[in-house]
Length: 90
Image 1 (cartoon, rainbow, N blue to C red):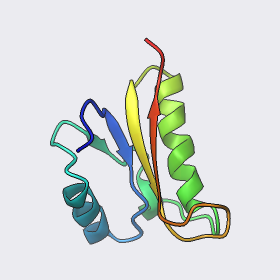
Image 2: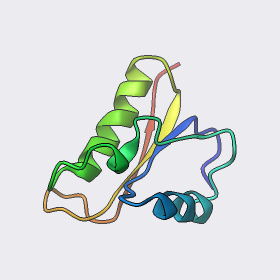
Image 3: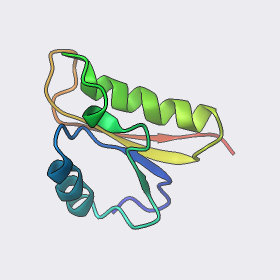
Image 4: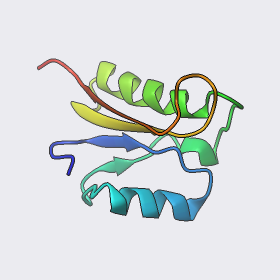
């Protein structure tokens, strides 16, 4: 589904959710899934999903990825069931 994606940050508070989400989104084996550690390593209340977007944007800005997907769920900061595709300039 997401062709050309280098990195995906998924809002998954539990290990099994990451597997379910990456499968449901048809992310291939070559996609780096939650290299930041995702919500399993840090879960700031009300902003965990937005952190996923920032992580992808930072990897693109640093040149580590050209295109990425960020996934966010729950929270009151406009992040309810958000899928965000980010892409850098070539």
